[in-house]
Amino acid sequence: MKSDDAWLPGRTDIDWIESLAQPPHPALLAIEAAAAPEDIPIVDRDAGRVLSVLASGRRRIVEVGTAFGYSTLWLAFGQPADGTIVTIDPDRSRTDRARGWWREAGIPDARITVVNAPALDALAAGDADLAGPFDLAFIDALKPEYQAYLDALAPRLAPHALVIADNVLWSGRASGAVDSAPGDPRVAAIRAFDAAVLADAGYTATILPVGDGLLIAARRD
Ligand SMILES: C[S@@+](CC[C@H](N)C(=O)[O-])C[C@H]1O[C@@H](n2cnc3c(N)ncnc32)[C@H](O)[C@@H]1O
Image (cartoon, rainbow, N blue to C red; front, top):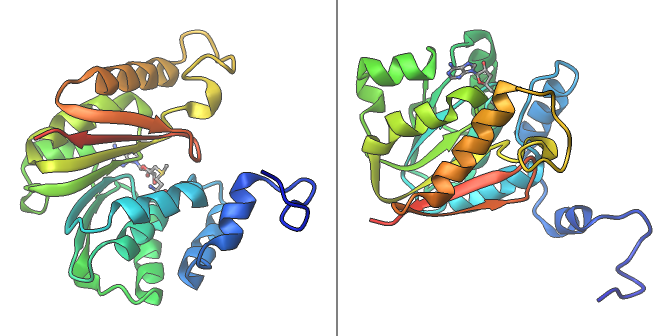
């Protein structure tokens, strides 16, 4: 219900939620400011806040797609103080800058390990850093590879682990609410990934219409 003092024209629910929330750490604001002019795709701030909540109590996290480490930092803030994250991105120029912002945020280097390689190669190589078991896996890299990332990560998930994936609504194109180019392989891959995970009896899963769509799947055992 609207109340006159709480409602301002043009203000969205997201604006209101943001007005109630703790202000983002300056390092998160610095990443937002750096990413926008360089067109570096990062999760929306509201999705970052969800990642932080879902990281609560999750000691070991693996992330596919680091970029400037924005989602990594939201995850790190939500984790227990002794939690660790292994994050994969072949672009070292991005992850080196991410390390600077993580330091600015006071995250000890030992908490975040970066693997600079394409994720499917790194996961196939059996790198010790990626052995698991992981309590949470966050997927946010090449859309046509989402299912392959999950297939490679699944044996490394701890009981009751969470799998989270970003961009699973792909700006309305996954559902068809917004038209996409015929045969766009990213749309087809995201649709297939969403359908497969939500139908998988091994997970309790849904999609939150937060940011560009966050798929959340909890391992049932
Ligand atoms: C959407 S951005 C990640 C954004 C980050 N999760 C955030 O919200 O701050 C996707 C990243 O995936 C990386 N990437 C591209 N190919 C990859 C691959 N094969 N394996 C892992 N990461 C890849 C890109 O370099 C890019 O930085």
